[in-house]
Image (cartoon, rainbow, N blue to C red):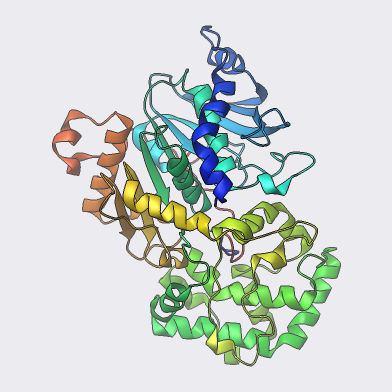
Length: 477
């Protein structure tokens, strides 16, 4: 996943899922919460829960909290860490959405699209190993999709006693992947899943779907302009790298993780086309300069605006080490061909190993994504996958097989990595909204009879419904 936000289980994980579920959830549900009337008191009565702060918001209570989790859910007595979460509380008589970005948690009040649709509560969780939700010392072998799903399962078990109505899980990009993995390992927890723009790299050695995507996306004129800038940035490598060196010196940036300024420069340039399509629209191509007549400054400015020269520095990579670790051990990552850069590229599409400090060991587990994909195809229930037509990550997506029930894959026309239900064609938008309302148990009678009448139950709120997209380079979904 890219500066435009890019985006396993071992055999022992698969064997351990049955027994571990009960053990870790039990720790969270041993002591019932207080029956006091104030919701904060009831939340803080949950064992392991502590308050960081409460922030006021009209119509809600918003809490930033820590929740104590086992470092290893198979061996919960071998140490714990504090996982940061937030809770947007509306009413215990409303359904609840379990949201995760798959990265850090936003500590400002925010509402995901499903939360707006069902007019409910929202629990948001920071993914393990993203600071400050990182064990100290960090045993990186405990960062995998089963451990993270078990974090969600345990947290759900703790809060389900307060929020007894239906629950939905959701997330976008890596968050959509996270919601899907949670459903795979704990399919009885949620009443529905809404996974947005979730990549599905089943075979990490086969990435031709991405190559085909880049030959067809948008218009030929736009593709040619983008490829031209990429190529010209490498033709002019010497003067632009001199500018990059000054930029790095001025900002005290270093390049120990990736290995050199030259590797970082090429990684940024290699991200350019992917990053454009991930977060831009065909109409934005008018702002792309014509490479042959562009000045060095214009080439620098457009690459920096879309890919970001700060990202592959040590300082830019460090916050996302957990993502790159997972990409290189379980999730997989794209390795696309760039034929227009033949003769100019020195490193090709660089792998996740280049973006993780050498001291952290990594070994790829190819069975992890195959397991999830097989499970979704044959066992999906109440799952909705939403993709954007022009989003590179949708080239390798989740698909449903004959065993899936009441589950759907929908594509928003012309949309990028920010695709959502609101961007679907009207008939599909109403249908998806109706499904979400039904799964949450709050579909009005009129919607049950006619899905075309479905609409969000909560009023729009520009501040609360703001989408805070973390713009990161290529290997981040």
